[in-house]
Length: 243
Ligand SMILES: NC(=O)c1ccc[n+]([C@@H]2O[C@H](COP(=O)([O-])OP(=O)(O)OC[C@H]3O[C@@H](n4cnc5c(N)ncnc54)[C@H](OP(=O)(O)O)[C@@H]3O)[C@@H](O)[C@H]2O)c1
Image (cartoon, rainbow, N blue to C red; front, side, top):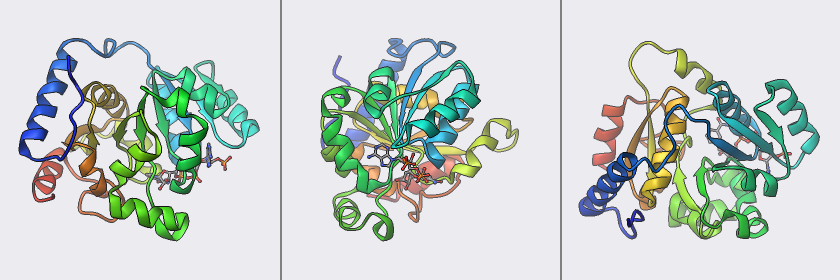
């Protein structure tokens, strides 16, 4: 089954991707919704640490990694037996799915150091190119588009852009929210990877909303119309106005 959609996200590409996702979900590509996923976190800071904790509470297993193994060990010890700490290489190897949540300036090095283990992995890319923080590489990535830039820096990874523009401190509240649903815009080229990422987005209490292929990843950064918190319907409406 071909589940990777290449190229521009015109209407036809979007529809092909949506159909492939429906097929992948129907074919049970991801394990049953109640089965645990193993998640490797590369960058266990504010966003990586927060998401990892939520995913553990939802019943998944997480291995945290950063540049500071002692901090990751302390975090894992606090979160119980489903939490582990390791090197970034170990975390990528451990994960059925990997969250990369590092400053964008670190992404090139991560991609080089872990190229062999990242190949073929489902990667949720929460990292944002922020010029004031990341410098030249962020300027390049914003010109190219954040999704396509990540794909170039992490070759062979099955990238899904998600969790890019809702502040980390807001994330623990969504699973308790009984009011209007909040959506999480998602962009990617690989239908199976999107199905897997969607499962983890739902674990956070958010509703995944596909906005297009990685070309549309350029809109999944803070400060764009899709940034911040929107209902799924609002996300669809905004996305329809974007190219
Ligand atoms: N904060 C938010 O609310 C939020 C929301 C959405 C998206 N984002 C994006 O997510 C990314 C992370 O943001 P953050 O706020 O979580 O930053 P943060 O708190 O500074 O965490 C960054 C993490 O990345 C690790 N790291 C840095 N270089 C690394 C490398 N080469 N290999 C492995 N790990 C590395 C850091 O390790 P050490 O601590 O050991 O240096 C730290 O654990 C950024 O791109 C940001 O734009 C942030």
